[in-house]
Length: 600
Image (cartoon, rainbow, N blue to C red):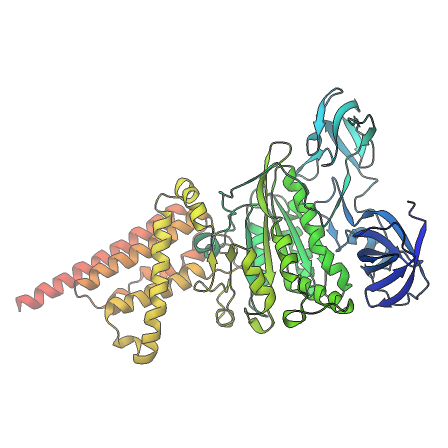
């Protein structure tokens, strides 16, 4: 079927929904071009010769009777070198290159190849004539950025024998680098690119159990609610609780090889912050710009709603592509609530029967399909890659009982609940340690014990126990006053406050505190717990808590997060020694006072 063939006409239009007739030989999810301006659309419903098409661009001015052009292929993304460092919209149009040709405001129907077809790449061929290859096998490599080697693979649906290869050298993305002969005898030229339908998960060989944490450098996450490479997490929170900032921190500092950041229906100024900040940031692993391993999908709130619906599929498909190369990829989806709202609007225009709060009945199914594409896998080229998904959820009024949040909880195993009261108190990340959870803790225990410290899990459990006990005693203190509590209980309150201020609270704008290494996290927990155990012993001997909490070194413990860098472990050791010395000296002074009093 030719792109220029008219395969129907518009019968009626309802916002982004176009109904066409005389649509013969089209299929579900087929890409359709609408009207003379050839706006991108996708078939979402078929009956006889009539089709319903959701259009990814503004339909203002389109009239009934306008032509529809069928393409014969599904809505897909173009995969190949040149994706990293780019900024695409929801249907993979390169926004920077479009802005250079069209100006700041994109024109409807404006099309430009997703990949720069004129750029030349230095390619090293890895196969020879006669080699048997199958889908996913690496046939060549090129250096995509300073830190990412792009591994060119056989398209997943192909297999056969290599009958011709070009010598290693300089190629453009559409140049033929090899020829594959299928078992049917068909010869297929292989380039550096191929297309893949966005709604179809890319195949892999085996799904593996996630066993390595995605180290984020954010203490409340790494310590209490960790996520593995290949895991799923949700960040729900009302307006102003810091969802976007938290995802920015994860994108900047997590130890994934590649970050795919999907801005789905968010405000333009928030995406601008990403576009401005990320190129200036230095990747702690490589020392190069963070954009050398980052790809952005920008579909802001003023863009067409149907494109918002497809943008997360565009992002996840590109992420799967790099996962298949053997990389650890993390997808930041901000936010799935805006995506669900797009589903609701389209469903309403289709006159479908609504479910909870007007959302379509298939909301849970779509969420499950999205999060199920995460995982750690053995790829078809026998490497191991992972895809981690972190989705922000924006419940209206911070109500976690609304449908998107509730359905998301069913499909993710890490839940980082943001708290409005913590945010109002300027405690960031505003992750509520009592409402949040991670079901990955036991899966990752062995890694932490082997790679950080054998006491990691015991230390984390002990610190969390103090926070749990503080919740109970805090209620009593609000009734009778903290001074009325026994010193043992007041110590728990004071230690919990130390944990909150000195450990859980983290300043994203502080050059030292913005990222905390996993080893520094353990040493900070150890210092705080040492204070608690020694203070507990001194109180048991009768010393008043007011003297314990007034020692000078305790102020240094509160400030250690932003005064001691990740490399100054020796200073943490000195801080711990000083704290224990002060406590020991206090214990000795109290013993002398006690002995003197008994002597009198």
